[in-house]
Image 1: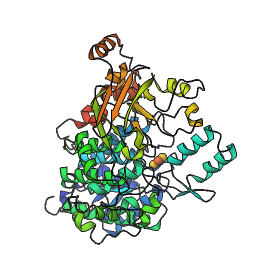
Image 2: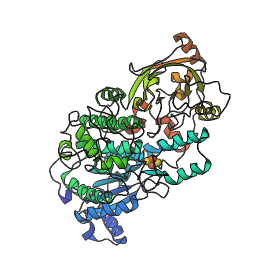
Image 3: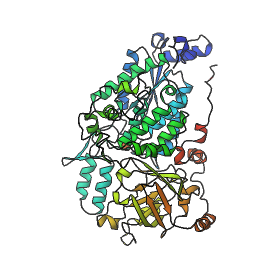
Image 4: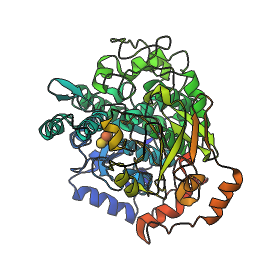
Length: 575
Ligand code: FES
């Protein structure tokens, strides 16, 4: 952070404050929109990157919230300009929003770079929007505040609380087992999503919004406020006021995101029982900030920090309850002894100062390090001969009996193969089998879809089986649960050893030892590898082809190689 800026130091001054022909054009076009010099003259121009969309139910309120941000910007003497960006709606996009996270990151970075913007407000929350927006803003490195969309209200069915994702999977299995009727299933459809806002279980959205806050990129407490709560509007306006001050102070992401703040974010993720997707996104975020984060760091810290947020799928409550219990400030207060409290944040104060006085109001929802929800850890990273670069599992969401397990494999070549087979009543499968899904990784999916919670075969569901070991190079929704081993790297589509697993093989997993092993000889593995044929790329042209050519593997955060490349992009010339 350098000394206070003067109006002529602003980026926007190069567009609007000089007197050449080009700036005449910029100002005349500002006037075309009904503004005059009083609106912009010498003021920080704040770009509000808004991922509002009619096709994204998690973000429908962001249109109104942008107006509230603008109110704050104007109050503080700034000039707001709202700019729409790709929304990445988890609810509707196929094959997966992950295919487009890097596209949003590129869009964010280039929107900010190419226009007269001095500071940024990022508005998002639905899963990939948070990392996408942050990655772009970090690469651009101008003052930035993230405004999280916030979780939706609790779901309700016949007086029972329903959680996003988790209860959909749970009742789908009840329906497959013939335990609930079509009519009840459609009642659940009416009650599971009752307001705007993101999923309200500890899915990827809640995890990544908390990660943004624990990195120091939101106002204190912002990530836990339910979208429909009036506090959310006030937080939006406060963020608008704060970003104007940050521009004058030149407080940038590079002043905030450090190795220590990344460690803080990992610890918060562990304590929240966060989504496994966080590993991929946080690796990508850290690497954009020049921090070489490895998956092994997650494993190290998962042994230090237990799960203390009693929120589904690892716990019992939902994000609305978490907010009433004190929210993320209260959770971070419980972690004081393990966090680096000196880490700087967008407030200009330290994390320690921001959580000063935070209290837990409901100790059953936010527990303590001495009395956690689970000591098993939110994330374990395993390695072995089928995952030389690692794979991950969420031990706290898996049945304990499966933490050490050896079983016979049933292997599926792709998603459609798997989807057909699991519905067969005559499938030769027991609860001790291990299901393996191939070709679901970054290139194979493509985009590494959330297929990692493979359905329990119908035959076993009817017998009451609700968990078994499943292995894939896919991801899993943070709202999912079970003994699902994910992100196997390198993926099968590019010839990772998962490609050579066959039905009838045996695999052994040992979570305490962090090991996974395919019981075949090295010679047999080599023979299968020699016989393997590389599949054709999924896309012949367009963005998908660019994606396939440049996407990194899961352990590298799935960023594009040319986006993590070192070097500074020059400011655009103004002619
Ligand atoms: Fe948007 Fe879950 S669908 S957060």
